Image (tube, rainbow, N blue to C red; front, side, top):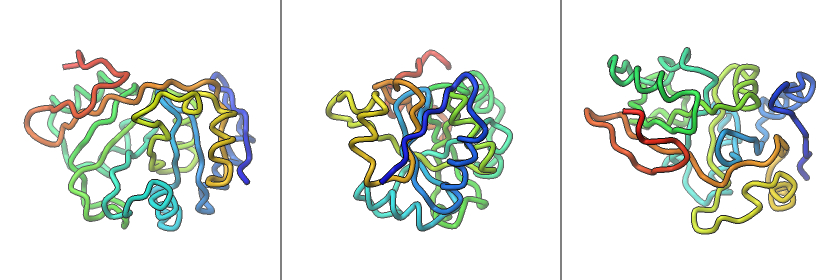
Amino acid sequence: MAELIRIYEENPNPKEIAKVIKVLRKGGLIIYPTDTVYGLGCDITNTRALEKIARIKGVKLAKANWSFICADLSNLSDYVRQIDTSTFKILKRALPGPYTFILPGSSNLPKDFKKKKTVGIRIPDNAIAQTLVRELGNPIVSTSIYDEDELLEYTTDPELIYEKWNNLVDIVIDGGYGDNVASTVIDLSEEEPEILREGKGSIDIF
């Protein structure tokens, strides 16, 4: 049974953050707020946790396309091959914000992602998500709990999210009501940017 933890975005409580980090380091799964919909996440370096998320989502881990939630652009070179100046300028303009950018993966990707040619990078404009990543010391892998077909209340209300997910995860963070519009996904891995999904983030960033 999951624990429901209230964390305020304006001033995330260090004690509560530490409790979540402990669970992530032990291979636990969390549901946490972003600047779009609530996300289901775990430590990107923990194979057991990644396999649990793959089972929940009904996909093979090797074929899963999940985002890396980062705190800022400083660790980009750990996971992404060298990018040109124009690509970096787009990232600087848009992040933190409601975007997922598909970028060419580097040879330093964690072992479960080694075969990936590209990686989705997210830097949400949300202090809870950013604080978790900073304290953990590496990104959180993330997949949305958003239902593409139905805009249901459980995607935005933390208590309803808890009711639905409490047997599948270890912690649900109540960071207030979430959004029901997912991030805008833009592929920057080729020469020309390609919009794969128009979501909350404006496409006028180019």
